[in-house]
Length: 416
Image (cartoon, rainbow, N blue to C red; front, side, top):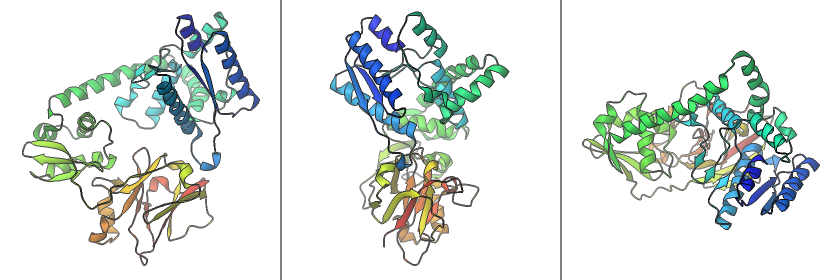
């Protein structure tokens, strides 16, 4: 409401979009009613959208809600030929974002946090604290409502906001300034990586082999990803490949290694090249799956996948994955060189190619194996090609195993 007041005060005429998830019943409806009345008073276009969350899907509500509202925002942006999607993210949101990324082990570059301007997303209040916003709306009599669910610590952001941050303020005065300074340090880190990449890149598709191999091992994955993102900005490099990046040192002239389902890294004397794969007989179809797709079961090639409650006993002819330990959408695809997982019951990771060898999958059948990959890049399961006498249909990652706390599971079965 503070942002809407400021835009209106400065003679902008935004299209206002209100998403009502209906989680708080009558209170949610009152939120919508207030927005609609203010827009009518200020002569602004207002579009209200009611959304219904299906909790039986076993997904994450906040992820679903974010995906749905930004889908709606972009559809309406296109319809109204708008320039930006403007949101009221503020400094406290920035702090929560950075803190979550630290706790989740994100790379240094990602600690830049939320960008004020990122393509079509504009966040003009990012340097303003929540306390300043509350003072502002009180001083200028801007109507607003407080979402009571924000005071509950059910979700990660709320937990940090309500439990951790007050204690940090008590024991570490000035911690907010220190944490926000990480955004600038992350930008410096990103500029340094770009500088290194600039000095080893020949053109849009190749870079210096010697310069790359002379880097410290810790730098190689970061610099390679920078080079990859420049050349193939709409693709995602395989996480397993980055973990095994030192293997490209052994590539001989003319040899290649897969880095995505459509591209390879090839060596030609003193250069590495990003090149498209030649067409082959392999089926490189990648199936993207949301939790809702699994509600009634889904069949893809020789795989039957479904979502349901945790069984009392696990069968030997099925793979069981804890829904809460993967991020949707997941994908089912053919495995690629560099793919790796942490097999169930093991401490370390293992290349999928090595795992298939260890599980005695015949050489001529290895190419038919599939993997299920979480949205965050983790290989959740390797699914072996059909063979009736084999028993276990594949291997799940230790990171997604079901335990006594599991409620919802993905069950994978083989169709013979």
